[in-house]
Length: 167
Image (cartoon, one colour):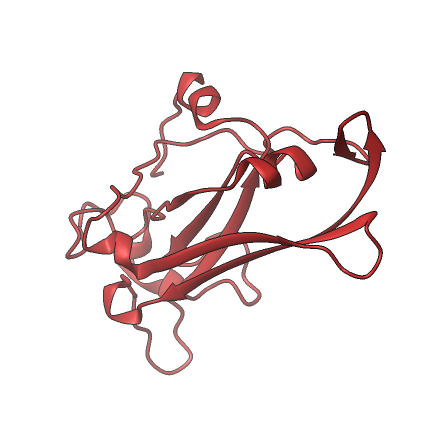
């Protein structure tokens, strides 16, 4: 992520508009820190680098993926995980982690106060999609990560009404 900031008093603020969270939370099953599945997204690190011009900055997000911890829906031939009945939102079949196969796994991650000040980002979420995305047919019918940046604190998301998913 690249950004440009301008001096403003003692600190800096990003130029441009700060967008609120783009989507409402669904019935989110967050992965508890220290759990077996949480180790799938290990060694999280979010840092700020300053290139040669001080009015620019670069935010780097890094983690190690442990594929042995990931819930994956195997497909054969030309089949997509989306063709697998376990990936239907109405499926009651759970993966080894106790969650439905179709349910994304959410890995909320902390960012430093420096990143919050420079960018407005309050936290990041490295989310695993075991079944891909049902409504996006090109390149998203396989297990993959989604990476989301939130400009509101987790407490704000927790205060929003929940909606029912799975159909």
